Image (tube, rainbow, N blue to C red):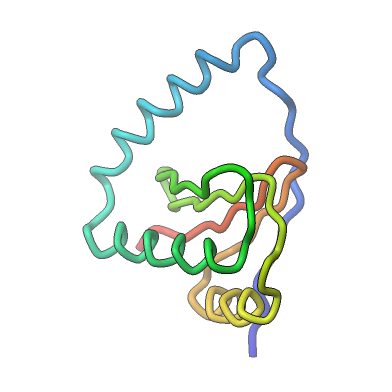
Length: 113
């Protein structure tokens, strides 16, 4: 039985440049989706639905494509269902999906095939 890897990252606020950074991130995300197959997009969407059942959050859970992985981000997360979350993370670990924890959010990274 393998365990999901968890990384702790330290992040800083973009401050004054947050708006420009958000627009740039949106443009890059739109371009990155062309590098993923429909099956990979569906897999990420299914994973998001599973996480929505386990986490309670004031903000949306969203999917962001990157060059080497698809990231599913949960902001302001509060665990609603620990038992099912543990089962999901066990499955994610078997699939090579990593978990990254920051002060602002929890991110699950699906590696690109």
